[in-house]
Image (cartoon, rainbow, N blue to C red):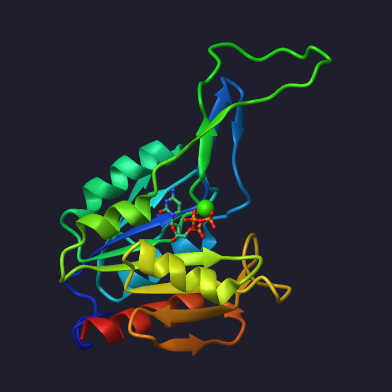
Length: 224
Ligand code: CTP
Ligand code: CA
């Protein structure tokens, strides 16, 4: 069907996308996780693949399928596994899109056997995970682009722009929490994009597929 159509806009680009939550093991049957569905990251993967890119989709535990044969999917569970796979894949990529809701903390140790009920209070010591986006920001070459996401409950514009600078991103996508029907577990999303050169672009509430198209349009505009 593509035979007569013009060359696709992302042909030749290698794009690494992280998506979904991570699960951090407490014991053999329990984990710390979050409500990320992975839908936004998977929508971005489909959009990039449809535009001709070769996509590596580093997916945390999600119940989603990718449909395009140009998407190479790498399933991971923990923040540490996601870190290793993403850093490796970014080395020969042109773009990184950090869409995963990576755990910020992981149990300091994982119990070998199921923790038993005692009737007493239980505390679990947590240690910080590594910041994947920040690590890519440090190894990023001038010709590579790096995109991040932010979801904030307060001072959202300030915090999003601070994250963009601290992690050396080219732009950051702020998910609005103000509106019902946006963000986690939803099929729709309302975003604002902040660029490193001071650009600000606000979008209407849309399906995650349409939001993905807006984000990739913004990416293409800064690539060309
Ligand atoms: N991110 C990442 N690795 C982490 C944590 C976050 O790659 N260990 C990425 C996210 O995928 C997102 C961006 O960093 O693109 C911002 O994530 P966010 O959770 O908003 O930022 P944090 O730096 O973790 O700050 P906090 O959660 O304390 O607000
Ligand atoms: Ca975080």
